[in-house]
Image (cartoon, rainbow, N blue to C red; front, side, top):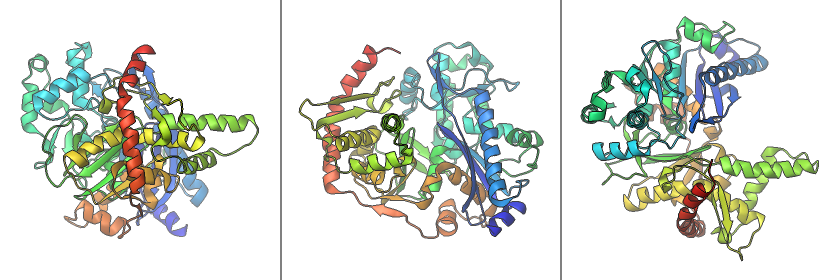
Length: 532
């Protein structure tokens, strides 16, 4: 405690703040990368006029409340105030669309990753560039706005993401970490910048040429992990800490997406390592040894925060529907005055799920609160079905919903591992799905048929990873690479708790997926039948 207090008072602590889908969280770390204080703020996106969004007020109120709660945690634990930091970094949910004019005015409501409204643009750009452009990528949103003839497009001066926006407001710098930039527009890892040939192809499109802006000038400057990305301005300090205690001048790391911070938080930035982040959404990332043989709509090509190419399977839905079902059990227990904590309910239900049949015994579920491009749906309708003679018990029911949370991920990863023959020695899991020891971890191992490790730091997740990236910027030794810094100075040889796939679980999940795939047409029909 004394060391942590001294670290804070001397200005040696490093802070990472991540804007997740349901929570904004800050993690303060010491010189040894141990978390010493945290603060958070819960929030939720809204569906407005068919668009999943957060308002600017949501963003700034959330950030200041998160930081205020961090200050409170520091005050209660150590009796001191944060006035200086050695480094700072912001990260956020990936990609989406934030377009600004010359005066810095937001031209259209922030369009988050969750939106599946850019299908025509994504399809056309994928064909034009011969490179998979997912619907959530910034360039897909921009081109869809062009296809829609949206009036604001002509006034665009700067296009960025949530993390890039916050960083810009904190520093005045229009920059982007390469991992997050790789979800705005395709990256050429050999030059650690946007792919120049593809920029030329995009700029030459007839529908693009009529606008006054140049795509190369409205995108942020690409930086890699370790690069200096500006300093906290006086205005930025006041926005972050309205109390006025935090001093300006703090160096900031390049803003990153939650995929890059997840890779960092799990020490999976080296070749043949991979990670799965499982929370509101779920994505798997594997650092590639070589290029994929062909373009797959289910697989995105992004990068690590240092620039090497990564194959990514991203799914919009993971634990939200599962959480809703657990909420029903909490409501039931409260109705009977049982006063059982939500954590205990999660633990019991998840652990009991392991007693269920390996293939869920004829039950199937779709966890789709929103559309899911991996299975070809633009909208979502959570759905549960079963055979009339299925064994409808609690274990099978919960196992079904745990499988459902990873089903679309498995469909994409089967292409990666079985068709493309991509190799991963270990997959590192992090996020809410892994909080109950051995449950989410074992089910993920079955889904991917690969050993899955969970680090002790996995619970801190992205904001801790962002703090580590900020620490790398100010503490790396010369040309020390990010993977070496992580292995030597952050994780110190730790490999975490490893679970190998159980062959019976693997076979059971494979059988479940056969039923799931056959039921996809029913998911599409229910979307048509139940209109929003």
